[in-house]
Each structure stands twice: as structure tokens, then as C-alpha cells.
Length: 169
Image 1 (tube, rainbow, N blue to C red):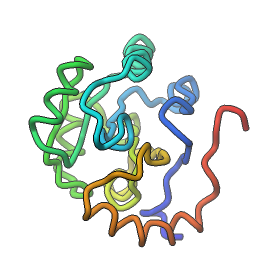
Image 2: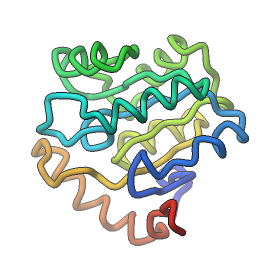
Image 3: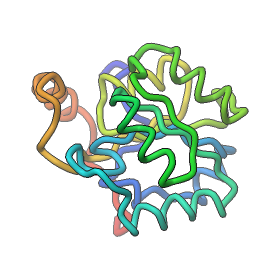
Image 4: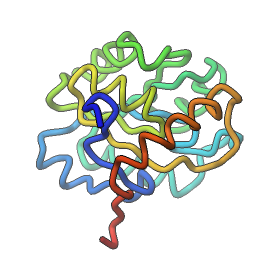
């Protein structure tokens, strides 16, 4: 499988990411997708479990930035609720929003991870810049129509990648 489409880590959800292991790798900046990574595509609010996870990132010394292809209104709502910066209409996998997020965080490729649920946006975009990429299983089947079409191709790629790791493995 081409390296650009292969995540460095594949887990069930953001809650299965070993934050101490990221710190050990020298990572202290997190660029994360929003829809179907942190919340289902149709959800409009931050749930308590997600807020607790974001707070644990912050208290663990991580800086966080949302990078989403979603609309400004949607990203703004979550940005405010989680008290983190964010970029909407990101145009992933293009480099611009990832570079902008690293600038906001004061990060570089060696100390920044990208978390997302899509190979062709989050993983490809992060890998093109040499970031540590983490793929999560999408939270919901409900998605934008364009995303559903890309998922058909993504299934082929996923067959070549090992199953998601979990905290129980």
C-alpha cells in the first residue's frame, strides 16, 4: 500500500489513542478532523465524553486545532464549545489548512499528529507533510454524499491495512 495512504496508527476511536505514547514520540500538537472523527456528522453539540477527552489533551500539554471541510458555522460552534482554534472549509487533503493549523499551534511536522476518519483527506493530507497520522473508524454511516462515494474506494485501501488497534489489544 502506498505510504501516502497508510496511517501511522489505526484505532477504533480517539479514546483509544495512547496520549503518553504520542508524548514519548515528541508529539504535542494535534490537528483533528471534526465530523465522524470527534462527533457524528449529524451531531450539533459537544458531548461530555468528548469534552473530557479534549480537556485531557489540554491538561496533558497538547495544543489542539480543528481542521474540517465543514462550513464555518459548524466549525465555529464546536471551536467555541471546546475552546480550541479551528479552520473550516479546509480543502483537505491540500496542504494549506494543515500548514495554517501548524502555524496556529506553533508546531512542525516532527511534533504534530493528524487525527481523522478519512484516508483520502486526513491521512493523505497529513502524510504529504510528514505528520504523524492517526486514522479512526468513522462514528456514523450518515455522511455527505461525496464522502459516501469516496468511502467505496477507501474500503479497498482499508483491506490492505491491519485492523484498528484498541486499548484492549
